[in-house]
Length: 343
Image 1 (tube, rainbow, N blue to C red):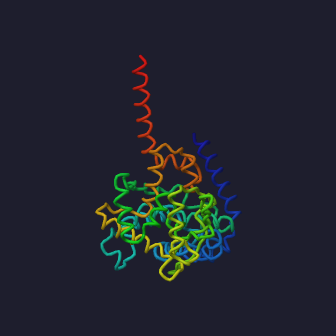
Image 2: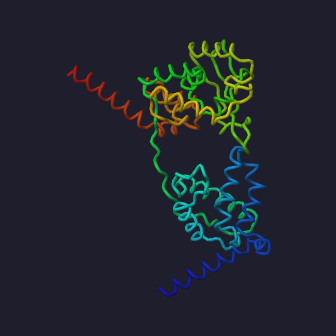
Image 3: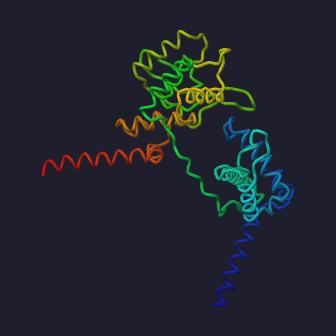
């Protein structure tokens, strides 16, 4: 037993020596965690990450990572340091702002997991640069994601919603959203050059995002987000009516003719819902409404997945499992009635 333990120790010592031989300890001493996060952000993240995410990454680094673990030497950062950080952020990591006065003091599980992913990417880059031998985020216990209930507009509420949207002057925009399930930025980014009214198709090629305080065009979320969508005759007619209303290159422009702010679109939605006496939902829930209604009316999952710009039909199936489960029950009941009649 002693011989096996001694052998294990020798093996671990050998492994440690081999790992250390891969590390440039002289260069590694030049960096604290904070300094390395800055280097990684400027030279790696800015290239690999979408511009719309730059501000978020910078906020994670400046508001949460550097103030808490920024002074730790890069080579000394441990999994325990990170566990303590994540616990602290969950309990009271929210930055004090006036608009956040009545919000919970702790960060959400999703935000903490995102911060872990940012640190992990920076540590992987440090390994590539031979500054550390292992990634301290490996093996960290991360908080479980809270299940956020999906809300949709039931079919019986759509008439009230669209009526109030028409009264508020935003009918065309929300009709096209409910007919296509576009992401908010994608809807705002539509230009007339993307619309083929003869064929009844829409090309999704860009999105509108707020970056560094400016409303600008940005690339789409993923390669699957670049897609063509078919629309029905009613949607074609509504777009023809919309075309006659404005001279902007954008289908749904701001009052000045440029791209409309995503925040403004959300505020419009909430005003319409309030005036219609309907429950408050997120803009993303109008996308969920499109997918749910389509599934409930027997549109196949692969078609819906393609229209939504998901990377796989499996992801769509997981997202809307509650809808497909209900459809399976209905199918089972239908088959039961048919078979009962045949007996």
